[in-house]
Image (cartoon, rainbow, N blue to C red; front, side):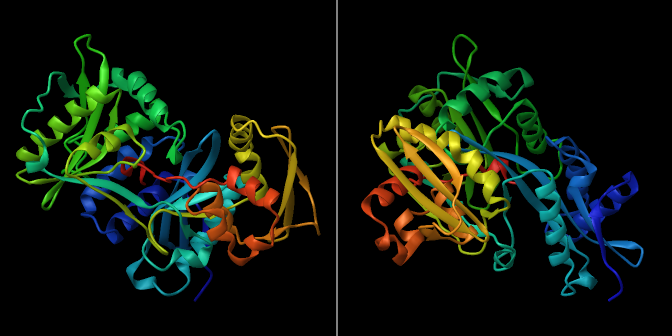
Length: 412
């Protein structure tokens, strides 16, 4: 194979050619995919030409993907993840190393941008070879319409989303997500891009009717719901509630929308700790968590040093909330980088510690620890038992088991 050149898009013509390749090779109708790429795709927060990485061969684009700047929350920590989507290879060039070349170039690009992590929702049994591990399960609650009590009645007014709703939506969202793991730190631009993606006028997702807003008697936003019709059931891919009374409004509205869609089942995509998921526990409902291996919700550690620094606010918060006394320390080694976490009277310090590591970890193991996808003793394995109780307690404190969840509306 002659020389393959991989780089970012530099001209409008290249961007359009990349879009046509992506639209042609993805599992969507070409014109609908092109419509999304030309509208919502261009206004997504942080979008730039260079974020569309392309592979050139013999004068044409034979591979392409998009990188989205995804600001992630893990408790008090804020991390920047490069979200990889729309990975595409020309049908006649597959199996020739184009995807591998694109991924290597994209990791270089993300490192130059200062991302700590990379995130993708990819095809099975491919991306683990590039250092990704499945860390974000799918979580949902299923209900039959017959199990929603008929005495529940809506009292709020509802209408379609308007831009003026954004401050109230962000306030409710931030309050519900403050302790979350792997949720997006949204802003006005992010909400607007989501609204454009799910607007009925955006033909890419014609089965998304948009977002419904609930208003109380003072015309204040108390909740919202974004449904999507699927065969046999109504999917609620996004929701928010101000309080428990708004939960009842949302459930009644979901029932109405399911009737309109002529389906008898609703699936709410929501994490277990969310107020609405807890509200549904009083009814006949199935609360599910779907764990994956080598597909979906995959994360790669790009820079250990940057990730550790980004996690410091969360680790400090956890230490101070527990009012710890005394001192403790534990050393890690990932690749050729070693650090020691030193704790004293609720304060945590990081120092280099070559040769004094308690644990040697894979980058994928550190991802599972920092996101709380698995317990420290399960991730570390047999080496856990060689640690003294002081070190084990420190690891349990800074790496608690969490409920990683990325709202489907934030997938890319």
